[in-house]
Image 1 (cartoon, rainbow, N blue to C red):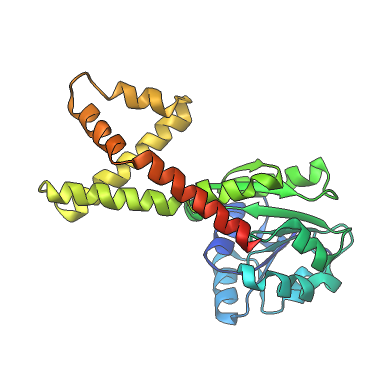
Image 2: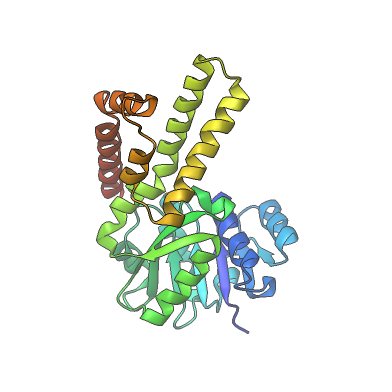
Length: 267
């Protein structure tokens, strides 16, 4: 009997995907098979979540309706070639490998295969991921919505044209690293002003979390919220002026541009 979902690759992101799908009640454990080259890893995830585990990628992919390839980019084509003969007619293959285009995947799996390219990010591990999905021409609207719904089990998901994937990587795929640098710098500032290290991190982290939630839940533009906390001749506007003088915006924009270019080079 065909299973609904096979996950190949049980690393941090693959595990987060399965946990999110199950916790959201989108699938039952018995509808999922996970595969990892490490029996220990596969068995651990299976034991925690109740899904079937294997170390055989072909066995996992055999007759599955959806196959998620959560392996490193340098392994994606090897794994895709390995499982291709086992794929059911009409199976949807979803790749989360950064920089690997739909064209490259079709070159391995065949032009008639249904393929979705996905880019989730690190916050998926706590159910707050941001994922972009790009579908090949063979994937119909109902099928991409089916994949989108699964990815919404661990955050938000948006369908985008593939040409935007480099920007997605630059903004959300790599974005958590930029945010971590900012949090670390803000906490260091707190320590420099006399705060304990643990308190400084707690204040910085909660401030970033709360600000992001406020923007998301109210739909307020970041500039509007910034203006609300910047009183005339006050402390905040002085700090903002210093950040502008030191080039915070241009540094972030340039970093993201370089990130996008690097992703293009990997494609």
